[in-house]
Picture (spheres, helix red, strand yellow):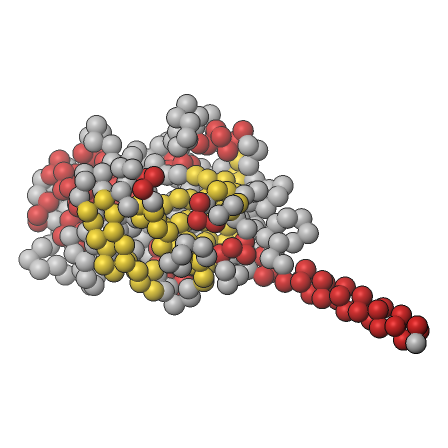
Length: 356
């Protein structure tokens, strides 16, 4: 009898050990505390363990670093909180002011899309709509999108896209209702994140990262990366794409910065719209016609309009016309917004008006 009990206990212990091993195999975090690329993507955002405490507070955990941009993309007035996850013992490499940083394999770029009840007083609360991940696998970058639940406790992977509604009070005190916020399909991400037929990040290039820290204006963001030991090769000085929302800047500077952030990911050499011949990235140095001035589009006909930009005449310019549209095929950018960016439209209106 005692022998049978001993055997049963031994078998139970063996089964318990086996179940523990199975759990470890399913654990999204590997033995080094890094995310296991072989198991990415996870179905739940929480499985990545990017954030500590309540996940919706977006407090970065180990290996997760916040960053911001001087000239961000407009996305239906959504605020954004951006982070970079780097595997333990790795770092980013500088490779030119206008080239995105060279990220190590295992990097995950994290972008959260948020609506505050009132941007003038963020303590009143907010809603996170979605989180987009761009993961550097062994051979290529891969996008994965996650939609947050109403309780703001979890985000679940959304492959085929979706929609949401939101509202926010802007800096000017106006209430903005977003009745059809669009979460793109994962396949759609390639439309913008494309350079020479390869998927790449867009925002984190040194000229767009060269700015003061959000919580310490005396410290430059790029310098902070160096001090933390996560960036190599950064020069003492570098170019900066200006903040297009800064009304103290001239109209040409503001306009060029806005176009770089909101249009140039496609309209650059090697971008998705390369064949169009309209190159409006900040660092483009070529014939003026390629910046849109008296340029006839190659694959678009606007009603009673002929040129992308008519200097001094924004209302005769296709560029501005397409910014004021919200439906295909006229809307630009073609994905990423469902409403007009009124402030951006005025920036480009002034930009075109002041082109000589």
